Picture 1 (cartoon, rainbow, N blue to C red):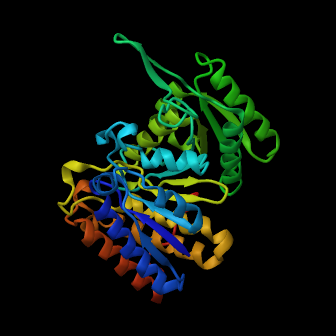
Picture 2 (picture 1 turned 90 degrees about the vertical axis):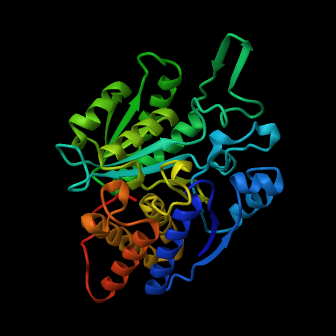
Length: 366
């Protein structure tokens, strides 16, 4: 399996190095034959190549079997015409990575919820209110005069159908329930179109139950009744916000894996940002990117074979075992470990598992 590694900005290089350490350990155990190549994006690429997303990177993405993308500081980038391209958004659009898959599962001692959460949010990834990716040319956000700003929301039947298919296929492997989250009571045309396509797809999966919830209620129900959800499918901005809320309720935004999935291209990406305030201090929690990398291996299993799925489960089990022990948590979770030490602990648990199970893997929906 050929992997293109893009460390990104801020804490990106640190958590990427930790993730690669875990991948090396699982490769040694399962014989995955991982071949890694690394390229610069973000601020480092901007300084050297005058762009945050070099053309060579874009050309290489479809040639490899998967991409590991570290967090980027796109808020600090210059305008697009001066080389400031958001690599995350650009990759999603160029390679039609329609579905952003974000599992959220509560953990004892970390979650603030009264009831358990075990759900997956499937977020449309390429359009919506995100102005850096919803236009063929130009931006979806503009100012007709100095005192007025307008933003265009783009919803298409094609993208809505693709993300709905991803959600229903995922639900077939889980508890067979999909919740479509929307704001069609106000956004009657755009969310009406989204719901029309979701309902069409639902008719193709009679075994899966579909319900529809307004986004306001969904935000509250994640707190009050998290166990009512299995797979949530929604548009870009709603999915972004709700998945961050769900991850934080489960213990931390740093615990949520994230996969950007297309038909032939897949990008593993930490759910959180680049945290420049702690960059270089060795205390960032690498869990999100580690679990995202595990999701990437699981995605590749359809082509690469069952050992990739087994490797993904082993990473998840070792990571969960590390998180279950307060003594092996990172500082943001009240533990004593830094980035490298946490990765070393996960690797040690992976090695220990060769002689027997360290923790029974829980269903993650990846």
